[in-house]
Structures are given as C-alpha cells and as structure tokens.
Length: 592
Image (cartoon, rainbow, N blue to C red):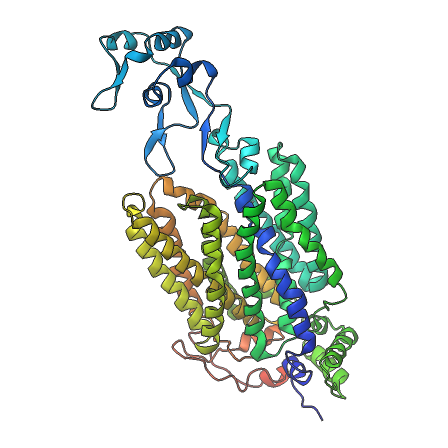
C-alpha cells in the first residue's frame, strides 16, 4: 500500500523524473529555451546604431570647395562629445555659411592652413574671415551608415539618430514596460485560469505583434505600441512550461530541470549572434526570431495542465487523469488509492487565494516576497543592461554578443552545482556579493578604457565574468522562487518578483546613458543593486532538499526556526499534513 503524504510523495510514486517528464524536457522545454533568446534579444540587432556620418549639402563638401578635409572639418563642422568620450567633429550638425562665405572659401581654398594650435587661418586674411560673421549651426537631415556589420537596422532605415537618438533607449524601455504589463496580467491568468492557457495565449501574442512591427517602422508611435504588445506576451513563454515541469518532477531533479533549460538558453544565446551575422537585415531578423515559435502550437497535446494547480483549484478528476497518464508513460503502476490521496490533498489545500494579495496576507510571506524580489532585481537589471551595452563595447557586435553568450552555459552549471552543494541561500547571496566586488574593480579601471592598450581587454574580461555570475544567479533565483512560494500563488509570486524587477529595469537604458557624464556611474548603480540583493537574499530560508509548499500555511511555517548562520538545515519533518503542522509550535527567528 502506498504511503500517505503530500504531492511530492505522489510524484515520487509515479516515477519522479521519468519518461513523461523527460519527454517534456527534451522535446518542449529544451527547444523552447533554445529559441527564446531570439524573440527576447533580437532588439539588440534591430535597434543597433552603427557608425554614421552626416551627408552635407553638395555645395559645401570639401571636394566641391577643393579643400583639405581636415581644414574643412575645422571650418564647417562643430565639435561634440563622441562615443569615446572625447571631443571630435559632429555627425549631427554643420555650420551653415552664407553663399557669399561659401564662394569666399572656394576662392581661397588653397590658402588655408592649420597653426600649431590646430586653428584654421588664412594667410594674411584672418581679420577678413572674422569680419564676415559667425555662421548658424544647422542640423543634418540625412546620413550615411557603416554597413560592415549590418545591411540595415530600424535605426538606419528611419534615421533615428542625433535629434531622434532618444528613440533607441525609449524603445528598449517600452519593451520593459510591455514585460511589466504582461507579467502582471499573465501571472494572474496562470494562477486563476491555468498555466497552459497562459502559455499559448502569450505565444500567439509574441508572434502576431512582432510581425506587426515590420510594415510600420516609419510611424514611430505605432511601432512602439506593437513593441510593447510583443513584449507583453513574453513572460509565460518562460514561466508556464518551466513551472509545470518543475511541479511534476521530484525534489532532487528540480535543479536539473531548471539548469537544463538555462543551458538550452545559453546555446540559443550562442546561436543567436551567428544567425544575426548571416542575416544582417533587421526585418528578416525579426521574422526568423519569432517564426520558430509557431511549432509550440503543435505541442498542445504534449503539455499538460499543472496537476498541482488543478488540485489547488479542487479539479481533482482532471488532476488524477493527468497523474495516471504520467504513471502509464513512466511504466509505473499508479497507487490504488491515488484518487483518494488527490482528494485528500485538495481538501487540505482549500483556502482562499487572492493572487498577488495573498503574497502579503502574512508578515512572513510578505517579507520573503520582498527579499526574493531584491534577488530577482539584482539579476535581471544587471543581465539586461549588459546585453544592451554590447553596442558600446569595442570590437565586433556579433563577436561581443557571442562571447557574452559563451559564458552563460558555464554560469548556469556553476549556479546549479553551487545551489545543490552549498545551498540556495548562500549561493544566491554570495554570487551577488562577489558581483558587487567585480563592479567595484571595474569602476576603478574604467578610466583606462580609452587611454591604455590593456584597459579595454581587462574590462571586457571582467564583463564576461560578471555575465557568467549573473547567469548563475538567474538559475538559483528561479530554483529558490519555485521552492519559496506555495503552489496556489507560485506563478503570481514569481510574476510579482519579475514585475517589480522589470519595473526597476525601466531606468536601465538611461543608467547606461549616464556613462556620457561619468564612465563610473553605470557600474556604480549596478554595484549598489547587487550589494542590496546580496544582503536581502541572505535572509531567505534555505530550500535545498525541501518539498514544495502547497498552501499558504505551508509557506508561512517553513524555515521559521532556522538560524541566520545555519548551513543547509535538515528538512526531514517538513510538510506533513497541514492539520498536523498547525499543532506544531515553531518559534520565530531572524530568518524570514
């Protein structure tokens, strides 16, 4: 006779991570996470701004005037701050001289020279030039673009440079706004209507609105609206199938499932710049980025609804049918009392869940939600800003993105290994603290980026190290969140953490732009965010080896007797029947 217990015991009886779960992992979750970097990150290519130069009127070009280009630049092009943070010839404006002055320059082109200070003078006629007045500064209206990397981008096709240069960070920010709105809506949809519905509706949203952007780039506001809507459906593509598979896998294999998904993501990150390099045209990149998502609609019969979620909603017959299917596929005989055990679980989990509000129904769960959010924010903010910042790095854009993607796989495996060996809490907190140290080192050396031969290489190396660590913290954060939040609000909990972290990340593109004021500022902000995240996550309970909490009461009681400096405390008595839990007094401590 099978033993009584909670849902994790049932999963163990049905084969743990058996053939059914592996089929989902290898044929759905793996391919999905391999594809996901394309729809999520392709905006780095679409919104790339290559080197460009102003197309000046024909009558003032150096070849028309018969003038040396260096001297011509001193006369016709004002100085401005360049991307190297040095003053140089403007690519956005030029001096608009009168026709009389243009003729004067043309007639005296051979007489101009540069003095020892680099100032243009005309032999024996300096006062005559000054007497003709100061020219007006006129904005360029067209540009030529470097096509050595991209044939075209949305930036080059629509001239979103100079006065319209703010369109790029605005679009990056609007994408985050779409993620925020989607997080808020789809997390609630997943907890109220099911993970499966949320996943397929989100997939359709991403495909349709991404393709809608192609013919409307000439209209910035319509393009931006579709940008928001495309990002709106992105979250359930990550969370729903991952949550379902983790919820039907046994305790010891949850880390493996998440690590496998993240490694698939890292391989996608490596393939993504290679595909971008071969295509190098923004519209085709967009099509190729979302077209593979169409295969997901053929997986409708493969992906089940989460039986844990069904049990939490009292839909026991549907949950039992799925569990029997799992047992059949895993070549396991289901327990004779399976239906009765599922019914008993449903009875024990009957409680009023109000989605996001339930996360703040008790002081313990509310504080853990806030601390978990700090960890998510530290990972998400740094990760996405480093991806956006790839265009500002020296060297080839595709190669830079490839190298940053190359370290994600080792980072994912590092995070999983440490999370299992050291524990979720100290791994998450320790990696974030180490990142803050690396950011402090970057702040100390960034001033040498453009002034020494070694500065750029050292900073690139440190950025790759940071990217590897952040990839590791992402894995640990998701494992930890899966184990901290109970089934009834698990997706709402993860969604809330993502919602707040993405809200804070709205300022990310402008944080990177602060480098024009001082190169240290972007790294200083990321240093502080990582430090706060490190402190916050150290107060979360250790969840390694623990059973997933099913109810709000489970989550509130879990780990309350742990000491702050404890290391992988035992969980042998965790999560028996809720009625028994309520009879056990567990004193509060300094770990929440």
